[in-house]
Length: 551
Ligand code: FAD
Image: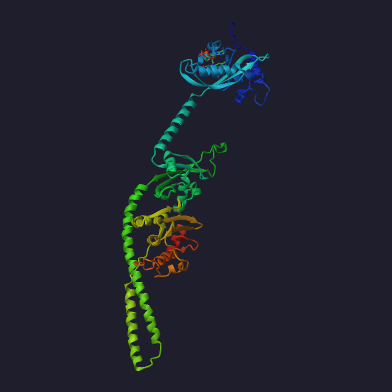
């Protein structure tokens, strides 16, 4: 076989490239055509200038015969490979092979180019001195006028540095992912449209535990409703936030979960060329949410708190009972006194009458003295500060406090809290009392019921600007005629009436009214009692402002 000759004349070289450019094989990348084409279109440059362009092209160019024997290389090829033109022309391109490229790849390379197609890929090459580099290579066949392959045009560049950077980036990424997934905290990157663009293993674990596809939406709702957090202002406030505590009541469990949340603002990637020198005035950003579960520590403090509450409630109950008993006595004393007062307004008719008049007046005045001393004995109810309160927490506490009574009566509680409940501003003990009065009533009603299956359903929801609590029992129910009377003081209709002063619903309603809300008995409900409590959601700011103003 005749040894091919190097392309020594400008005309030869320019002819080959001209042929190639006239009929580039299918799939020829635009950059290969661009490297040889004259600026501005299909017109060719004068051969001299054209060769200068190819010579100085910022990519290693080689032209081979159909067996890959090198006929021409440009300056960058010499610089990149370390081979001088005179020592490499006449050699096969395989001189560059580092022998670590899989043979299959060469096979595929040759199959492609022999089918008149352009091949693109990455090979491991070595330089003259032996050191390996990664060559990103494009090979395009150049056809003769008969449509046969006359030459191959090769273009390659060293992408070792890019590969190194990509590898490092990949390593960094896997490191980040490993750290992210190993972290025992829930992590989620949240975009302005509330979509989650990144999360970790703990996040996915939580999603499956609470059976919610996107726990981030619960976190955001809880932060907004329980901590006045605003996702849109995250981009403007450079600080982020730290350790905001939220409560989530999973739908599939009776146990609430508590998280301490921190948020960091992360600027969104801006790839726009226009913002290369000057950043966009209002760049979009993400919220990196880090949520540390504090449920077990909350449970511990709550247990201790519950014992305190138990003691406080027992004390409060004693005070309330005394209050009720004394109020009852005052009320009952006032009835005969009023009759006597009415009798005294009648004219004294006889001597005996006159004496009776004096006696009655004495009775009135000693009665008044008794009332005054009873009123003085009324225990003072402590004034309670208003605080941000989560009603799910209050109700859950009351359920726990009532557990012994519920178990003793065989009552099943179906607790259906809203996953996330907004905070309201209120008096904690009073609201706990409200829940306890209603819970005690439900237990008494269920005990009075002949049903074998005793059920109490407690549901919390947000409805417009109010929190709605439904307490539904399948107990003895309240007769239609009594639905208003039951709220009157001292009205008690329990069959086992002992120990009930008939003040529970009166007090519950009073507490709800003092919070701007209401307690009603659902009139349509049959087969038990359905008590509906509505309490308005005040924004913390407004409520505190109102409290400041009133104090
Ligand atoms: P070889 O025995 O040369 O080839 C291995 C396999 O390639 C064979 O089994 C066969 O499947 C196929 N093959 C080789 N030659 C032919 C042929 N003439 N006809 C049909 N099939 C054939 N290789 C590099 O490693 N680095 C480069 O930078 C590089 N640049 C090239 C540029 C051009 C323009 C061309 C045409 C080829 C280039 N090659 C390059 C491929 C090179 O020619 C060799 O095929 C390759 O280096 C493998 O060489 P080898 O000695 O290991 O095996």
